[in-house]
Image 1 (cartoon, rainbow, N blue to C red):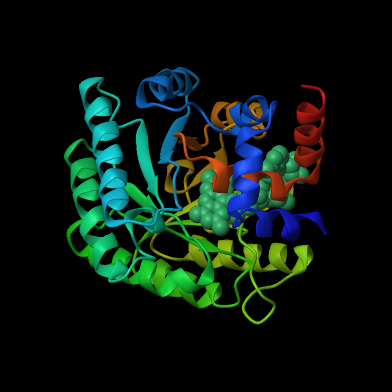
Image 2: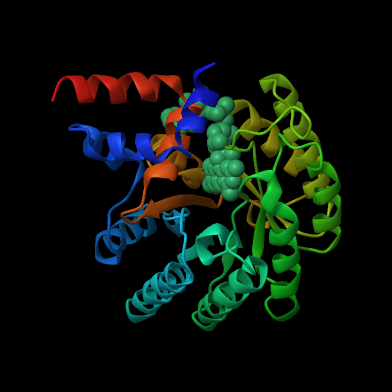
Length: 307
Ligand code: FAD
């Protein structure tokens, strides 16, 4: 019940101001956000590499309202890629981007987002890494998939995300698997209506399994983005049945969530990539993490009340 309320609050400016200013917020935010600057996130990339983990880096900040902010988002990723290159970390880290941050919701947003993301994808390719387009709410997805297809003409390694809770996703999975794409499958983190998405957790899990089967049987590279132990075990079994070797798919989890599992799976020989978000505009990302687990909200409330 609490999840949808928190997701609704994630769109409210009033709540944003309240949460951002509350004493005790930072302590909880720090669990999920790896830092505010590139220099703060680099040691985390190095630490992950030392533990045998890969990362995908997300500069947070989806709620932009101007073209200038969309250019600043592009530049923040270019700065990040420049630092990774200087430090020789290009092959350990890929980038995850939200097209909303690149201007997708502004007027002429589809073209603007494509124009902003292309140089980022180009710069990533130049240092031997790649970019994955995150999936946001369902109204943005046709544009995201069209941009993905366009980028793949020059950079076929560009990835995208699909969400098991949406009815459309099995068809998307079939199309992307046949096209040989890198595809991250996740449950889905936005508040979606019953007209487009399963609302029941068990239905979402069943859809997730059907989609893993499609991706494993296809020609692409499946990236399983979940902390759910059942789905991880099912993935391992389905990969085995599909005859996929350990380097022919990967697991992905979020920074700050089930960290011991990141290391355990990597030690078993799996490729494990940690989605590592950083930056100052963390509100939307943070609220989705609260919505996923009500216990986080209690922890957050306690840390505010005890400050
Ligand atoms: P759940 O059933 O939600 O969780 C399983 C277990 O994991 C829980 O019991 C708990 O122990 C732990 N857990 C899960 N979430 C939390 C949390 N927030 N805090 C503490 N413990 C937690 N969603 C999108 O809509 N678009 C994206 O582009 C996207 N990218 C993602 C990338 C990665 C690498 C991952 C891992 C997730 C991404 N998500 C994205 C979020 C995803 O949709 C889910 O909301 C999120 O992963 C929780 O689902 P779950 O599969 O972990 O299963």
